[in-house]
Image 1 (cartoon, rainbow, N blue to C red):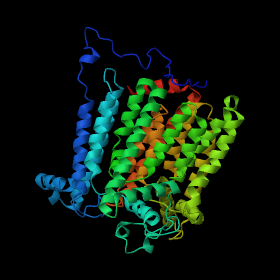
Image 2 (image 1 turned 180 degrees about the vertical axis):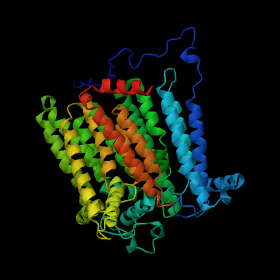
Image 3 (image 1 turned 135 degrees about the horizontal axis):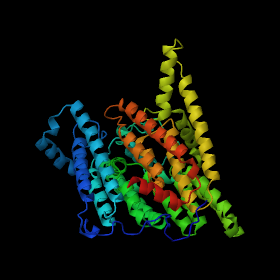
Image 4 (image 1 turned 135 degrees about the vertical axis):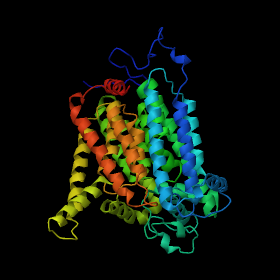
Length: 529
């Protein structure tokens, strides 16, 4: 049985209790839901304290939670947080104790976050948008005016913007090491790498450099504010889409995304142009829902000129566009073809001399591996087994074998999901599932890569896939290379358990593969209540 999407309508659940019907009718043994005091703000309060403590940890010199960056009074919150650290005795703790404290805070954060989700699933607990947005802003403010957390990407963005706007060089060709006198270069990790980001990312960076001036600190603040603006915009778009797809349950989807600790730490606390890509993808999906398919394709193509990974969403969108041939005109097809050619061409033309090197740099990322990925830990385990059995001590065959197997699996799953795209709801599910599977199978993985999957999967309404994605965000929150690189092993093991959980869940529910969107959502939500 396939779902039928009706533009602007709410999903209708099958079963005895509709999704938008008030639960727990008042009786003699219980209070009316309106008289109950919601516990969700209590969970949010716990999270608020935890984020505040993480902010204090971030200003502890030499700890590594915030990356090396200029220390000036322009980052005014640092002085207050340092004073709080001294008052609470945190500044006197050893590196090992600070590390244990940080990971304890991650566990508490996710426990409070899951408690908020469980409370939101209960009948009688009301999730309000002002509550969700208000606490999202409160969590973010702790980390917004600090040096970037856990990643040096902000400084790479600043340099590539300066290369174009100040030095007059093509960032797709120029490496940071070419300008050793530039004050931002000392803070960059990848000094000998050209921009791996698309042209739109570099144009936005150059514009922001022009606006924020020469100071590295001013640039950092400007980039963090821009990052936060796109993140907030993405939440508004998610809210709109979730309301159209999930009805009242859309508020829960908003809460799951906006309060996710990984999203706050890596997107509000640091700078990643993934937020721009996610914003453009969500805008495209919303426009498609509103019956502007060509314009939708335009924005998703633009997202791919920020980060190429957006192409994984573009393909299923094009599949649905072609399948809906009964309501498509020749002019729409011609316009779509024009967009697919003209938008990338217009973006790349000013930087055309560097396109080959940029593409090669992006492709070379597929040859890298990181401690947080599942293929990495499985490859390491295979090589250790080979050595234990008396094989070569320095072979890399295990890593490459695992990498190829995971790539083949992903390609098969990608094709299967694209083939199943028949209408809008199956499109949303395919986009989210593809994004999550890419995270679980990629050999090179950074924690914030899961952000795209979370924003898309929550729109699918599948409790199984949402649960797996939330689990993946916890797993990747345990990968903190700047504090202790060995924690990558913990992250990859936890991520492997998430993958097993998802695989078992998919196999157990394979008989419901063609259930309607509303049915799958209602069954999943009732099972969690």
